[in-house]
Length: 378
Image (cartoon, one colour):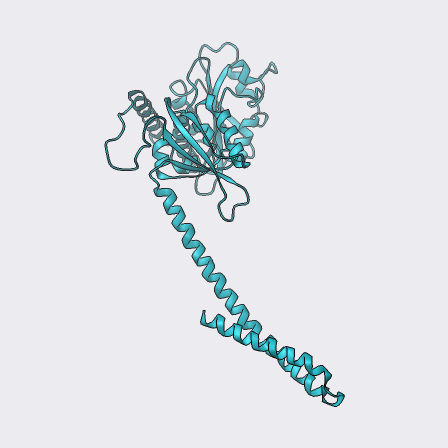
């Protein structure tokens, strides 16, 4: 502060001297060289003294401001994470930017998995369109909204979602802050007090997923596999039947090669041989997973050609009566290299894939990718 005041005084003196030089233009012609020498001296003073001084002051001020901003941001992040209410920050497409600790406990979805995925995907299918519409309305400035939705993992329990617009500093577009609360009851506490009564059905499903994860790990580690195709076939057999009706494994990324196809034994409309002969490059869903490296979970797939066509030129998803699917790239966290793509179908009356099952599949895909990487690059 003292340096700033001193600079201001020096600058005021300079302005006063410039005014005197302007008035000196009326002196006799013989005295003008002296005035000109004085003006040049003042210009040198600005270039050599005042300007570098100004740059030092502005640099110090910017550094202090940046430090203060960083401290404010760290404080706000800490407050966001420690809020006892389940809170998520999403964009106008409902894609999760941040999810706090209470939010992970409330939804049952870890923050790392939720980030980058639509929050509407964690809701029951019937609530997704309404939630997307209300989020878009809040983001475009139509005011705060509140609606009742249902989480996909707990469809019987209504959840109150309150949405409000937020414009974080440095963000080019408006984001939406979502607060989730159990409808008709207090929001769950982040700590202390008795927890909710365990749901027997949810506990059973969680145990089944842990059994599946254990079976996959055992299959990958029980004995060495000689080829990459053998790894994919071993993993596919663990998933076939107990987890999915169809399991299709494609090796590679830039050049996909189909290695394994397992289908239901009583399937009449689509033959396993037809999918084995299919070019993976003709399956947009597989190509997108290999390029983008992100898991696709679809319930009642809208695009019938997403998995290409069979030998009779009919869409595979329609002929196989696929009601839900998972398309999972086998990717390593270290470098993001895609080792292959695994596609799972559920057909007919079987329950659709849930977000919890997609999370478990995401974990198993990393284990499979690691097993494949140990055998060399695709």
